[in-house]
Length: 388
Image (cartoon, rainbow, N blue to C red; front, side):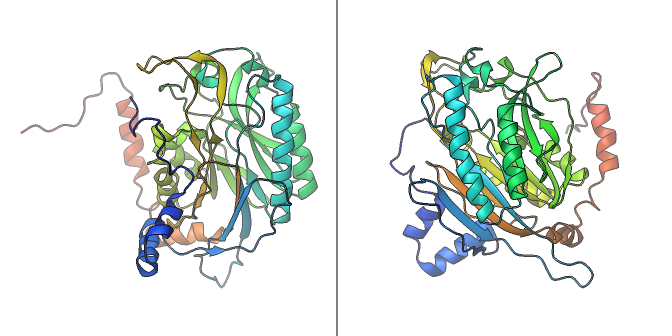
């Protein structure tokens, strides 16, 4: 079952929603439609272009919205998110595939630094193809690496230290304690040291998303990392479908929550622009939704028990990465076909200001829900249903 249609091309995949609107609506109507869809108008940032020969989209916006307070100075931060394709065919040696992605992404991180980025997040499983559809253990398990000493963390640590940047690096982790695999996001601080890590809390078992063949639900809770640029957290991919997952990061004090993902056109594209934005509104923090991009072809055909013919690709990862503010304003998305870097200049003071404005935390009734949740997990729970 594919909720949002089949995988047939429409000829419009090269266009973003914003481009479709801009090409077809007159200016007064376009401005009002964008206000309804995206909230306040965000101001483009003047950023240095990529050097010639680098094929990567670059967008940047000043999100704005915060008022100037009398007692607190603005807390301005530049956040960068990166979406990318793999580089080499999945039939190439593992080391070559990983090294090629490392080389490409290094250039993107370097350029984000020239754009003034303070915090940067990469997409889910960024140093590898998203091979979890295949259910084959090898060669794909060879991409797994130690979260502290693996080659990807070593690379990211050197870049974070060089550019005084906090970098979130989602990898396939091989735990040194028992060699168990995890879907993990490693958080590297400005000094190049690992601050900590978060493991994916919710694992899909849906169509080609056969991830529990490789790793299970995370065991590290909902950590928030206190960095020089703000308190950040990571809600990995499928966790965005679970409102309580978002809520817990907020209750632990997150000001920015990153959502590194790998999701495909027919599975989720219509709900993608909504989920992270809704989380930003409901929890009074910034959200950064990052999606993989491109179509990855694997050597062997596979099926997933969903009635579909055997195939060799996961489907198209549609990119469209974006950033949303606590007041519901969001940036335009990156493209649906190719690599991209999105920079947003934000003021973290807006988080508290929106809490004051809406009062969501004050009116949350956590005590009531805690009591009811404790009852619901009891096998003998009886639903509160009143019949006619």
